[in-house]
Structure formats: structure tokens, C-alpha cells
Image: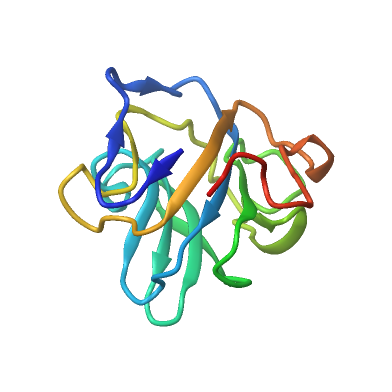
Length: 173
């Protein structure tokens, strides 16, 4: 269980350089939704690293953003939070350029909450870089809340494959 105010980083870079499909899912609870804070980020700053991905809370009022960057820009899906209780979130991304789906899809408690489709030649791989939980590069935009059971899969998962629990996850405070 990650409780904000600090950050976690992989010991070595997470190598996703041969991957074009990902699903990142996690349980999260946050009470402070008033400031910009990073939930997770694959790179020191995804804005400047093609192949990076991110999820963050954007002020004001707790807007959830999930996205990926590419050589030609970045794509973000935005949705407001349900409330401050525990919920399951998932961001499914397909950057192969061949799928007939949105490039980035956001799910909250197993229900689709938004998508962003990029047309044209957008194919690219994700990158090899450090994976941060709870802050950008370990020194700014700290997350204030709790994150549990974060999982990264190397494919686009359907809601049936998510780690969803309709009840409050057991063992969480």
C-alpha cells in the first residue's frame, strides 16, 4: 500500500521498448484533489519523452488524466473523480497504429470513462526508463492519497480481466 507524501521508483529502468500495448491498473483513494499531482509516470517527464506514459490528478476539483506520449505529441484522456473513496482505475493503451480502437482508454470501476483515438501513422513503442509512483522524477508533483495493487500488463486488457472488486478492497484502511 502506497501512502502519499513520498515516492517510489523502480531500481532499474522498466524496459517496455518492444511493447506497443499496455494496461496499467490500480486502486486509489485520495482526499486532496486540489493540486496537480502525479499518480504514476514512466520517465522523468513524459512531456519530453516519446514512448512515456502517465496518470495524474489535475486541479481544480480532481480531474483524472491518463495518457501516453509519441514522437508527434501526446494523447490524454480526462475524467472527473467519482468521490474520495476507494476505486479501481485502468488506462489501456495501444500505440501499434493498427488497432481499430482508441489509442488511450480510461476505465473507472470497470466502466469506460473516456477514450482518445489518434488516426494516421502513430505507431511507436513505449520506452525504457524509470517508473515512478507518487511523484514526477521523485522531486515534484507529489501525490496525496493511497495507491494499491498497481499492475502493468503488456496487452490491452478488457474490463473482465481487471483486478476489480465491487466492495471496498479488504485490508485497506
